[in-house]
Image 1 (tube, one colour):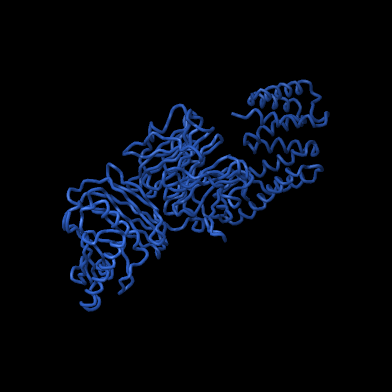
Image 2: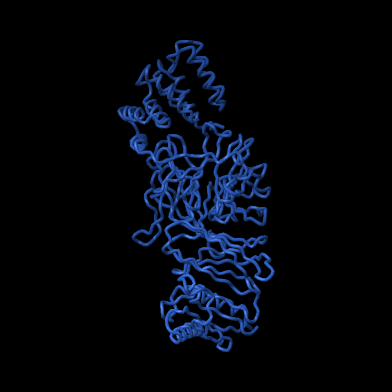
Length: 636
């Protein structure tokens, strides 16, 4: 519905017109015009349009009627029709109303006629006594036009494809987000003025027919929209407006997937939600940083992008504005932080663009004070961006595909969901993911287990969650260029460790793991995959600390257990040297545990040299597996 205040403001300046220009000598035309103004004052926009058109039909030089009709059309986004009426005014009297030049130029900008827009913006600046605010905004629009003319000359590759009728219908479908494995998509569908979430699964590269997401989230009385899903598909952040428990007009909510359904959503509360307007959440891959849009105080313009960090106790820190390299005095919306935790895609009408809102990318950096900052945004280019509004972009985990919504010829209805291959220079940093299933080694029963993944160089936790109750599965995103240690724990079982050495990886790759857990029994062995030594050395490398702390925690949780630490080598070198090296490595771990207050009578160590290989020593991969540290349960 149109805003009544907008149209009253539109009408008031006409009192400044010269009397001979704002009225008609045709009595019936003036009557229709007066009736239209009455409708406009009462927010009866459709009726006002009819009578303004009647007035023009009766007097085709009725400038005030053209002006009012053009203003209504421009305010409602019908720029093509607005251009016709504004152009007619200037043909009759180019000095009738200075702002007509500005409004015509604005309409030309928003229909992609940049050269003509420049002409009329410049003619507007030629009028005397223009306010500083108007001069500033006109200058901004001129930059947009100049940017657009250059941008059109250097188009970027863009071949959008409809995602298909399993998802798109005759209704509006928009705001798509996909999980890291691209096997699940969640999107918004609007039908009968009600917005709800729908989802689809992909099997053998084919999307299944979309289904209603959940009665726990969707509601018949309120709209749900602007959603974002964590890479593993387990956490859904979304926006809901005007709910009874809301703190403001629109708040951010969270729901967790529980089996085949979703939990009852809850308002994430202060300090993220306020009495104002918070919306359009996007969660980082590690689940610890939430990006969102807000109109709260302390911003740069109307809508700004903010972020907040999650504390260990589940509360959120006070939100921080992303600053002047992202936000402008205009509007920034639709943030999407990629799984690389570095590439932020968003929509803005403040940075130079092709008209209305454009899509941009900015990269996270460390500034000279070693604080987080952002690079100056880069426009995604033409024809990804056009004179129309572009927003609501999401990027696949591998960074190769972008998903968006648009109303195009050949679609299935109104807004449809499309995807396209993202130009390489606009892609995020390479990322990988690990997808695993945890089960009992003896009976194959799927297990609910605690999964932790750490950056081995910094010790920072990048994933901390539990597997699904029903199927023991988990999925975690990993940024390339780093090395990670994974630990799987469950009460009554030996822990499991694995590592992902991605420091030299230059492409996206998925790691699929089947993880058998062993119950705690005498004689069972745990291979410590994240204990590291330099070649032919027995000093522990710093990257080993995470694994060593896991051993300490395991022994403290099971105070009656005794273990034997074993060192092993490959068959390179002589037997005696390998035996000594393996014994010294096992002893180093033994001494570390004692220094962590593990009683010495619970521990023993032994070097096995090359005598107990678990793989073929003929290959480097095999020798790597044989060079290992492990422990064995010796007493319960």
